[in-house]
Length: 384
Ligand SMILES: Cc1ncc(COP(=O)(O)O)c(C=O)c1O
Figure 1 (tube, protein in one colour):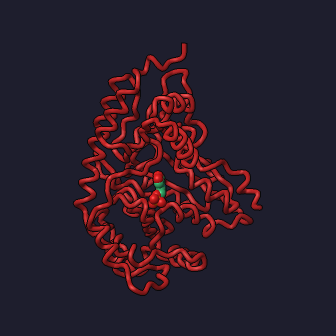
Figure 2 (spheres, helix red, strand yellow):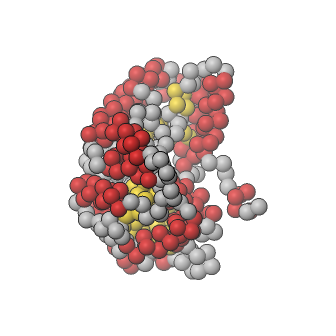
Figure 3 (cartoon, helix red, strand yellow):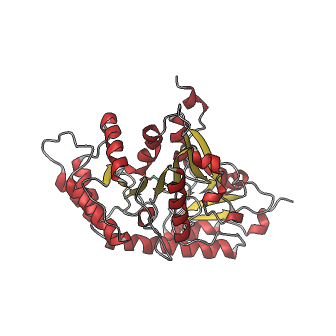
């Protein structure tokens, strides 16, 4: 067996699903704010496009995907970020962004070389670390917290680490906090990349879930050795479809395509058609933002009225909330669980986050309000 697998902690969301099932088996009504997997219906135009495209004879799809899917994505990218991408060479479909994020170190890191390190935010999406460990890469988490405003800056990483970095991951809008990266820090990272020669990757799966200024894409600021990872999961309610797109530097993508061909990861053509419909429509995205915005208002108001400190952000459907003084994140999550409310403790997203926990705004607006009724004011949580 691979020793690296034995050394890994279980994926945190698996643990949440286990606890939820145990409660439901006891007949408890559970409000699940744990995993970021919203329940709003997938738009009908997506479902219809999928059904209409199911063929009588179904053959292997190509790794590169149909040109018309890549064209639809690149047209969206142009409309949304004002950046022209060549659909022939600058966009490659993935089965959601998770697998692509996981695999990337296998493609770009040779553990025997000096340049063998992956740099990523912590707290952050656990897959950046997990994929790096499977690939045998060295890992370097960048510790984000309230005092640095959860903003990842090049000067937070020692020069010698940047010099041996193969990949630097950005993730803005940021899971779990919802923080956005200002333009000047995107530029600072592109400059750092030019100085040190790593590949700069940006996980952009939440760019469409915003309630203030529109989040930016890395590719507005740099293209050489830059990759952006997009997804229809959150934008279009398609977590179950597994549809994403990796875009950016054409040379890197040509190299990456060879890897994907070897692995045999390709998107079925009927899913490509559903994805094409989704990238081509903005109405359903606005409707989703409207619903998430309502949930945010209800939860923000309710939590603040109860005295909780919620990090002030304007993107993603996550709320990052400080634990009452003296109560750890795990204890907070366990006590909320006793009330039938599932949240993610901050430490699920890496050590150093034990004072925080995350709400994913998954339950309906009504259920958000009902769940709040079960949450006592903050001062009642404090330890004696
Ligand atoms: C920061 C971040 N990146 C990537 C993903 C993966 O999304 P998907 O594989 O559904 O595209 C998630 C999912 O929750 C996420 O939170």
